[in-house]
View (cartoon, rainbow, N blue to C red):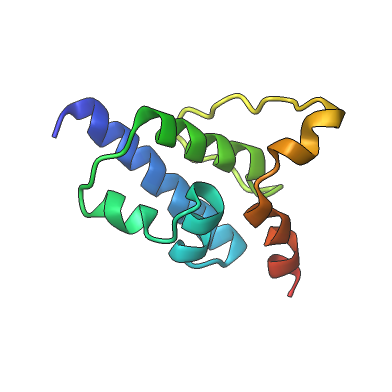
Length: 106
């Protein structure tokens, strides 16, 4: 496995572990929210390939939804979180993420 792929894989799994622990969510739930696929991180951990587009999508989701007060993992570059125009916000929201605050509050 090329070194760059190992680094990207490590970034994904590090963010997963930190996010899941801080929100007390399962890997499958975080995968559903971040990647739209409950098995995404299982496959990444098993060595399956993923596209750069998917990596950017998942890391962008982590950055945009990172728990307030939780520190971003050291050694993992944090992507810029784009600011959405107010009229576009509904079109760009991840529908699965809308329920995240409800789950954490429960």
